[in-house]
Length: 214
Image (tube, rainbow, N blue to C red; front, side, top):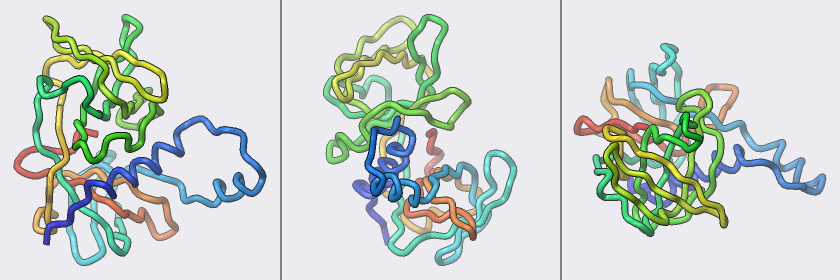
């Protein structure tokens, strides 16, 4: 059965995003609620095995972890897109690193379907690489140059310019089924840190040779 996660996956990513944003002043009751929220983690790696509500993953760090799939967990994959698909008005998620010229250089780009516009909006720290950030924002303009494309994105009244060099992975979200959870398939899992190991409400799995680049 295909599990359509389009709204729900990004809800999970939004939760992760909110934990990375600078905290606003809160009342003690609100702070207590914040303190009780589970720690959010990302599991990146390849599937060792899948059965029922259990997913065993060999992480990119070489560790094998047992991920528990929560009731009602959702599944999706990614499909290839092109940098030329990015148009003004699109909502994108771009992982990037600071570049020598003072701007940012993209590590990967996710073009969200229109129904997801606004999900997780903002710019915050990310753990794809050391010092990387994730920016979920609307494309204000996109200019094609000799060395790729530069986009200016806007979020919460702010703007950020990000260069997307040729060869940068560009993907969009696509459907997936449990049959795609095979040994060796690459996954990206936003999860909660629990005593028994990572607890996942969403899984993003690679298929047809396309892997989640985030």
